[in-house]
Structures are given as C-alpha cells and as structure tokens.
Length: 477
Ligand SMILES: Cc1cc2nc3c(=O)[nH]c(=O)nc-3n(C[C@H](O)[C@H](O)[C@H](O)COP(=O)(O)OP(=O)(O)OC[C@H]3O[C@@H](n4cnc5c(N)ncnc54)[C@H](O)[C@@H]3O)c2cc1C
Ligand code: SF4
Image (cartoon, rainbow, N blue to C red):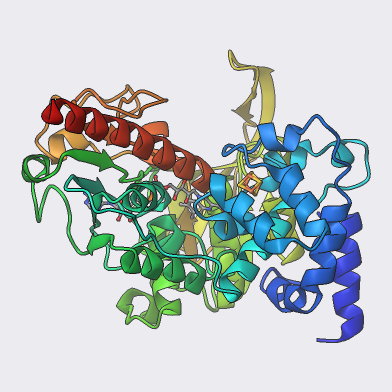
C-alpha cells in the first residue's frame, strides 16, 4: 500500500471520520494503523480538550474514564492508560473495534459537537489495549486465594465472559457452559472478521482458561444437561444465553430455496474463516459468490450481511428497507461503510413475497412515510400500484432476533420472563425471579450491544459476589 494512501487515510480519519476514501476498506485499517499507531494515537488523544463536561464518559455504557486515559496516551504513559481503561472495561480492544461510537462516546464528544470532528476515542482505546497485549501487560486472573464457591455461567458471549473474568479474579470456581464448539458468542460467530478479527477474541478466551475458568463447550443446557442439575451443583447461576430466534416474515414463497437467515449466513462465513468444513457454504447455499444478493432489514446485522456478501464476491448487493435513510435503525457509520463498498440501498421498499421455487426475485411494495405513530416515528404506508420485482438469487433475512422460550426449553416455569420473552431480572443486581439465578446481556435486555453485555456481566458478577460473601458470613457465624 502506498504511503500516500496511508497518509490520506490518517488525515481523512482525523478530519472527516465518516468519509473514508472509497478504495479503503475496514480491513485496511489495521495495516495502516500499525505503522502510524504511536504518533497517531498520541495526536488523536492530544485533541481532547479536557472539556470538564465529559459527555463521552457519561454516554459510554461502562462510564470509561475517557478524558484521563486520553491525557495519559497523549503524554506517552501507555501502561497507565491501559490500566485505567481496563479498570472499567473487561475487553477494551473489542469495544474499541466494534462499539457504534457514533451513537455513544464519540457522538457526544464536545469537539465533534463544535464541528471539528470527534476525537477517535474507540481507535485510541483499541490502540492502548493492543499495545498492552504486545507488551505483556494484560495478565490472566491470579486470585490471591481460591474460594470454594462454584458459579455456573450459561453462555460464553461477552456478557458471560465479562462475569467469568470478574468472578475468577476473586477466586471463585467458574464453569462456563456453551452449546457452540468455540466460546465468544456473537463475537465469534456473529460479528464478521473484517470488523472484529477472530484472533483478538480467541486470545481473550485462552487467557480466561489460563486464569482458571473452565469451559464446557458443545453443552446445550436443556439438552445435554438440565437447568436443575446446574442449580444443584453451583452456588449461583448466570444466564447469558443471548437471543437467537430469528424474526420471520410471513410472506408468500418465504420457504423457497435461496432464502436464508442472517445468523446462518454469518455463522457459515465466520466458520469458514476458522478453516472449518462448512458444507452449506461449499454447496453455495450460504455463499454469496457470483449471486445477486438482496438483504432484507435495516439494522447492523443487515449491514454485516451486505458487507460480507461484497467480500464473498456477489455480483450485486442490495438492501431493502421499508423506511428511509434517516429512519434506519442501524449505525449511520455502518451505512456509509456499506455504501462506499458498493451496496445499493433501496429505501422505502418492503418485501411482499418471493418469486420462484428456487428464489428468483423479491416482490416489492413501494412505501411512503405517513403520519407519526404513538412513538413519534412516521409509519410506512404502501403506495398502491407501484409494486415491482427485485431480481435475486440469494435473499438474506435480517429482521432481528427474539429470545428463545427458556422456561419451557429448560423446564423451569418459575423463571419469569417479560412480555417480549426476555428473562425478567433486576437491572442493578441482575437477579431473576429465582434466588441465586442471575441474567445478563441480550437475554435480559433484548438484542443490544457488546458494551452493554459487558456492563451487565460485570454488574451481575458483583451481585453474585455479594450473595456468596453474605452466605459465607452466615456460615461462619
Ligand atoms: C450479526 C451481528 C452483528 C453485531 N455487531 C455488533 C457490533 O458491531 N457492535 C456491538 O456492540 N454489538 C453488535 N452486535 C450485538 C452483540 O453481538 C450482542 O449484543 C452481544 O454479543 C450480546 O452478548 P451476550 O453475551 O448477551 O450473548 P451472545 O453473544 O449471543 O452469547 C450467548 C452465548 O450463549 C450460548 N447459548 C445460548 N443458549 C444456550 C444454551 N441453551 N446452552 C448453552 N449455551 C447457550 C450461545 O451459543 C452463545 O455463545 C451484533 C449482533 C449480531 C447478531
Ligand atoms: S467502551 Fe465503547 S462507548 Fe465506551 S469508550 Fe469504548 S468505544 Fe466508546
């Protein structure tokens, strides 16, 4: 890559973070970053005005002490910056890569709001922690004493892992149960590798193992082991199972070959990147190469499917969304990335059915935005007589996720759920309707973000420690 091109990126990222040149892709970022890291991180960190009203910090779900670690980075005190960053965040290098910063810390940077372009907080957080790994500052848990209490965590996603880390550091015996073969949850099998490199996730899991966390993989709770058995053998249980039931579209022809679910498509792609044998990918069923791809949905999962399809060599990639760009639920930064990479957004378009036994096209109704509904959002209305067919060989449904029915699947009817099916739990302690059973992450709050799962996992670990300390105290009296 030419030096000129790298410099161009550096300046663009600093001055216009949302306007990368179209020929630069996300995976170029690390390559560029490696060369300019120290100088650029210090330069970016030095742009923080230390404004005294750290909206960035209050809009970070972990309340990271951003101004202080930016100041330390600007002063070259990287190890101290790392210590401070990791004090509030279990996986800072992961959040630095994949938080939607434009909606969180960076979107609320005072410099951004004064029109001068945000301090690239996420990139600096990533840089500090990548440097910490390179220098051996990131250490596995080494509790000063072992405790006898056992905690079982169901789900090895960011929520479960954040809790496992905190509990293990206090000497608790932690076992994480997961139905997949690899830990990481959606970090491993959902989020594409061009946004979050898989070795970054695997390194964390290795370190948790080195610190004494036990992983029981390929263990589907409710099938391979009952919830009741887990309750009997652990002092506390944390449910961190995420949400995996894909929302369906009840439309004619939806069962046709070539119409697939986003999670299956992304999992196949991620498995391939691990070198696994994936027959559905090799057969073409879950592979966009050489196809006209239509993705239905407007959230971040849809953006990941679009950008993965481009990388797999689709001949065309379109996104159908029933509202307009201003009303997309996904991050505007992700939309801009997808547009730069060649995705065509077909706004105000809703699928009404599918043509062909093996899909040949999506029957589309054109929409307009009508009067605002009770939530204040304009409702899409069909424009009569404007239907058309969008040609497609592969249709990827990215309409969101819902929780599985855990009380039924696990034969535990006393576990209360909300009307959306998420596990009902206190938002501070994360304790559910069952004493000693906690919940965190997406299964508690519905499909959300990694950073919120980490926060929940850390809070749940604190509450579990309070419980087991109180029990130990009673036993000692
Ligand atoms: C495609 C996609 C892209 C995303 N991109 C981003 C992004 O860029 N940035 C961001 O912040 N967020 C993103 N998210 C959201 C984010 O990944 C989730 O909010 C986060 O992973 C939730 O963490 P969790 O620990 O609650 O659950 P998960 O990460 O879903 O992990 C749950 C784990 O529980 C296991 N499990 C479930 N049921 C059982 C059972 N019965 N027995 C044993 N194990 C079980 C699963 O196998 C899984 O490993 C994305 C989500 C998707 C789907
Ligand atoms: S954790 Fe996310 S929101 Fe918080 S500072 Fe880091 S990138 Fe920003």
